[in-house]
Figure 1 (spheres, rainbow, N blue to C red):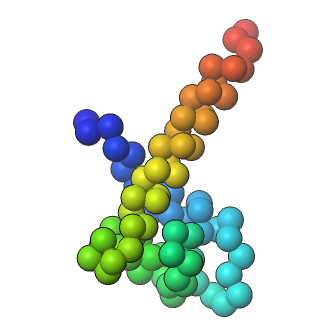
Figure 2 (cartoon, rainbow, N blue to C red; figure 1 turned 135 degrees about the vertical axis):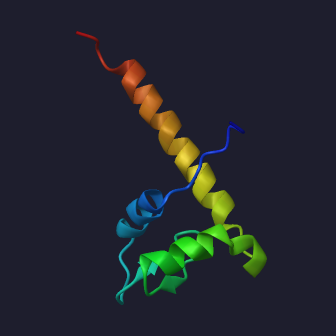
Amino acid sequence: TSGRASITVRDILAVSQRQPVPQRGYQCVSCCRVFPTLWSVTNHVRHSSQEGYSCKVYYRRLKALWQKEHKEQEAAAPRV
């Protein structure tokens, strides 16, 4: 493995649901664009560098931070 966090549809959906959007759709929290479907925002993130955005990098970094936080929480949890 390359050490990079792989971004999944579930990751994008989790982030998107935390952001209130005034209209129906899914928001890319990196560039704030709103997309009508989960597929379209996922496709945007995957190909964002071709569009001049760094959304894929943003989501990878966010996922890496979540994984680090999760590991720290597991390590801090008392063992029974």
